[in-house]
Length: 133
Image 1: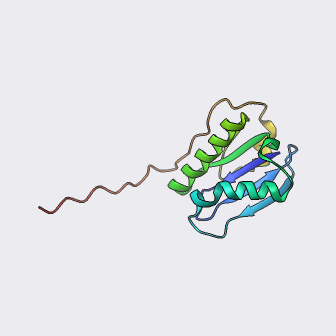
Image 2: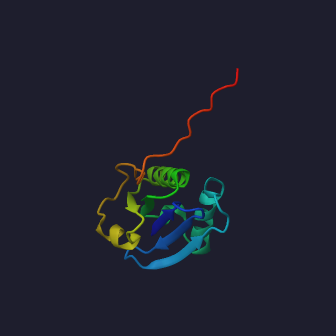
Image 3: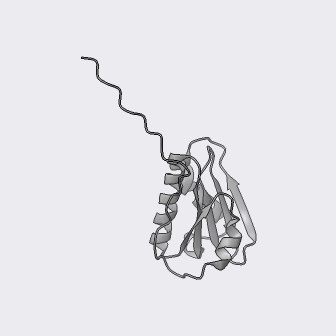
């Protein structure tokens, strides 16, 4: 079983794929910007709904960008932690790719290295305001 996590937008999406690449089920959150609050619970709910456990996962695929700076970091960090804890491979996927096609070419069987976030542009971090003396 393959879990796909996409947190690049205001809402997040999860999908379960068979090893062959066929879609089993999909979940899209309704709450905007709730990634860190609801992501793990939604993964668990999607697995339970389809009579699977985390132990049934063989690969985790994650959208690595471009997208929301914070959203991507939440999704990629969660995916890396799950893959590491389960000792399964993780595949980083850019937005325009089909996760099922990329996963079919991945031959790793254990966690070997984390996925890394892809930022199309550098983050826009606001400069601190000067203190009024």
